Amino acid sequence: MTVRGDQVVVSGDVATEERRAEVSTVISEIAPDMVIHNDIHVVCADEPTRREELR
Image 1 (tube, rainbow, N blue to C red):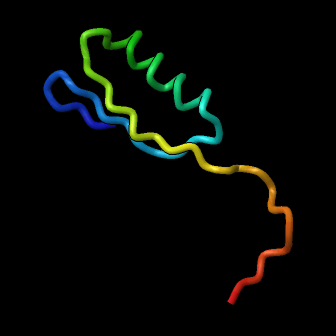
Image 2 (tube, helix red, strand yellow):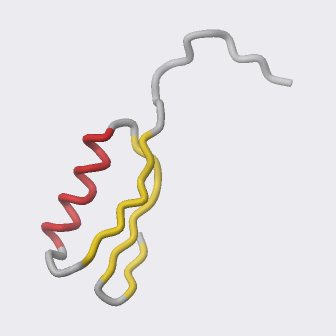
């Protein structure tokens, strides 16, 4: 998380869209006057469905 003036930029990875939205909700509750830029990405956190080949 980076704070610049009245703006908060959050970034990172989460497993679901709900978690991404929760981040914005929590920040809004803590700092209601801040502008939030949510650059969090939803990434697949499921177990692999096939064998991974390392080279």
